[in-house]
Amino acid sequence: MKQEFVDLVDKLVAFRSVASQPSEKRLVLEFAEKWFKENNITTKWFDSKNSPSLLATVKGLEKKTVVLVAHLDVVPAPDKMFITRVEGDKIFGRGVLDNKGCAAILMLVLKRLKKIDQKHPTVKLLLTTDEEEGGFEGVGKIIKMKNILKPDAVFIPDGGGENLIVTKEKGAIHLLADFRGKAAHGSRPWEGVNALDRGWEFLNALKKEINYNEKTIKNKWKSTISLGRVEGGEAINQVPDLAEFGIDIRFTEEVDPVELLKFIKKKIKKIGRIKKIILVDRFQSDEKDKIIMLYQKTVNNYFKGRVNFGFGHGASDARHFNNLGVPVWLHYPKGGEHHGDNEWISIDSVEKMIYALVDFFSNLRKSDF
Image (cartoon, rainbow, N blue to C red; front, side, top):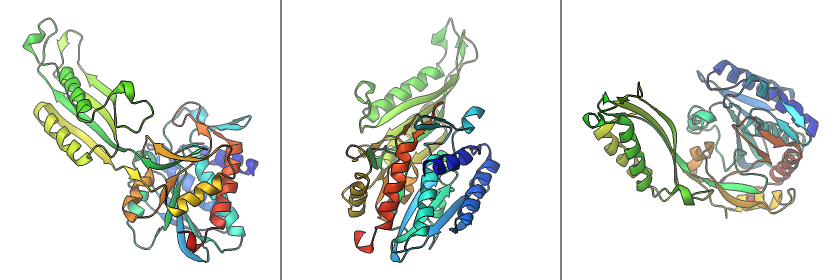
């Protein structure tokens, strides 16, 4: 099984399916579609100008449906990262953890479910190509289509860790704003208004509004602010009259996003303009839900140490299922440095997860929901 995974993820990683190359997104899905066909698994294609999706289905006799979600788009990387390499128990490459390796896991799980008795629920795997851009064309659009997914439970291997099941994630606001000032000579700053200073003043007001404290925030379930982009000024000896700030806000249930948006708009209206603002909802599921607890019990039989429940600082496609009232959880194998230059996943951990997932899904019955 390990070699089968290594071979499959190697082929998936080879596609440069980044946001700027929609043709590669299509090609990686076409590869997956061909793979499913070779394994007698039915598929349905969802077209989109830049971000198509593919739904694979293994029908079961139980009148329940579990939806699995993984994404085949990745963030940009040097060319060498689109060629996998194996070092001991680790396989390296762009997307091996986030999220092509996890997509390969689910593909291999479906292959095995197809070969056993069909007493389990119907299992659907949705492969998308826009999660890194917000998931609006993929899960966000498909979830609204009638009689397509119809999930009774949703599993997404796009967060957590070998010993961590994620049942809640922070929401996000991505803000790009211009701040206006008045130009002046650098030797006479009192004659101008520094646009960069206005940006910093806004940033500090924003931190105060959500009670953000950098010194106490490390790895806690608290709202955060990160300044990701600053641009302003034409010359060292000139007071800048325009500055652009890109700000990443992550919020917990302690922050009302509607009220925070009102605060942001009111503050910026007086000193600049909002160029772009994106709101991403929080995600939260009940870790005491019957099926989630059953999942925890199953995976505890395969991984060393107890698999606990926790939270994620980032955002995923899980939030798109918020209004369906069904259990949703995230869990993936041991790995690290996703979006980094040495992204990796443990092959041994992958094998354990495949066995655990086949065990879990094949033994699910209607009474477990």
